[in-house]
Length: 156
Length: 156
Length: 156
Length: 156
Image (cartoon, chains in turn red, brown, yellow, green):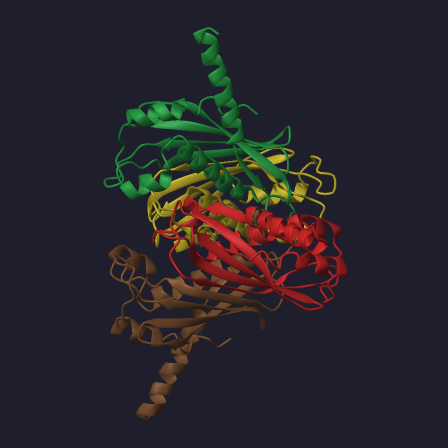
């Protein structure tokens, strides 16, 4: 087997692992409201859960970042589109992908799947700061590299 | 006093009332996270509180809408920009304004003020549906008129 | 007017102020679930809001305590009884009272009133710790005195 | 192999399955507050997630109950004890067991384990009601039987 083939196989397996490690949740009673569907604001909690899982997977758990106190990645923008109503008991799979990244910020895209149907999308914009001063700083090169591994995770 | 002057005085007083009735909250412990600031997703809860208050003020309380079961106003889009970190104990004033409105949807803008400083903005897009079928329907004329009263509420 | 009378008048006025400063909230859409009533867990969020307001009122705001880092008051026990269903749009008044207090801990009682009807009760047990070590420590004498002012706040 | 042995083996395997199907979660950023630990009220959200999972496992998913509209199981009491601080990133296993059950109500006990250490306990009391009238009603015999299967789930 040629080296290229091997690399492709590895990539395919990595992609599969990526799929398997996608964040999953079931719409809980506390996620819904008296209109009978997911309260829109709770989608962002689930998006952040998917983000925390992804960061852990690539070796940059947010809890460690906060404890170390040298790099903060606060959100400066968040948005979501609600395509179909998510109901109590629905099983949801969240895929996450790096959508863009510059020296000091990155954008993540989220897709919320109920079976084969796309029920919602979201995106979050994160900037790198020094938590001690609150000032902007560059993303560490190792984090940029690690984030690159999220680029292929958006497959439904 | 001319009729125009009277109208202007009324408007000024209405505007003042609008300011007074703006939603206020203090960033609670449960709003913050271990990074020491408001968890971004909770901003949407507060935006929705401001929306519920505004709808009640103009005579269209959401709880009555849900109980009546003839008109639903689900969100199809929500977004927020985080300009400055909101901290535990901060006192926040939320002003809300109708940004746009068509036959079947409307857009609300929210501004989150800490004193004279704008700490965050948000917007939500609502569509009119028939809750029994989930299908799009026109906004009632009376609601369109009532929403118009929100148009001047965005003054900081 | 005798001194005793004066003191009683002061107490009556203080009691009135206590009543006026009781925490109030309206059951929001995000407080409810698809069963159409307040999700039980959210009652504790509202109880804590009442606690934060009370601590601010007596000069011991929790945000300052956390920032100062010398005294932590974590909960070691919390409980609630749900007497009647709270529904979306219900207006609720939370009265809070010091139920018991020792050298190192205190117990707060909460009553959730919808008009004249008691809809729920709760209580929380707090211990004094040194946040740097996590170890138990005595409550400051000034805090014990301040907490005493909450003892009469439970009037419905 | 004697029949008794077989039954015991089955029980052991069922117990193992019970252990495996215990609810697990990682303390998320939104679970914590600016004091750096789990906000106490969020423990009840996780307890309810464990309850929803257990009810689904024994064939009585809460979402179906709410949709069917014939049996409601509202909480009339909830309580929790916080033994050790749960921190951002902690991996927690929730075991759940039926603690008591009568004709019209049942009590569930929850244990929150971080590795081999018990970090918190909780319990919830549920009553059977007819959701159309809000009145008390007996638990269905099939549900009583199904709840019995939870009796052995509390093993840490």
